[in-house]
Image (cartoon, rainbow, N blue to C red; front, side):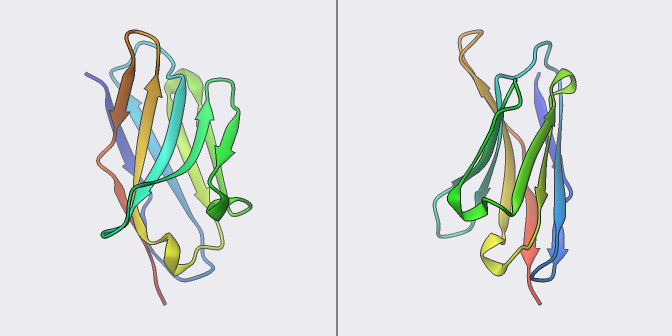
Length: 118
């Protein structure tokens, strides 16, 4: 059974930084795409960043220049370095792994809370 476990969330002041990690287990193959999403109550879930198995990354406009996604493919571990955080970044951040192989798959972690507040 594939499991994704996020860590690294917490409380940070505006302008501060956090690094989220997502460790996976139970997979025998490298995920095609890994991603970070976030959700704030009352809003739709937002895609934050993606990275494929070749290391190609893509970002939502609202985090470009501030967040960096990276991964260690053999271990299906993905990170999200978040800099210059502001209150709008407050959300639960979720790790996702998806792909079209093996009849398609879409795995989610339980989420980690990030709160940006003074």
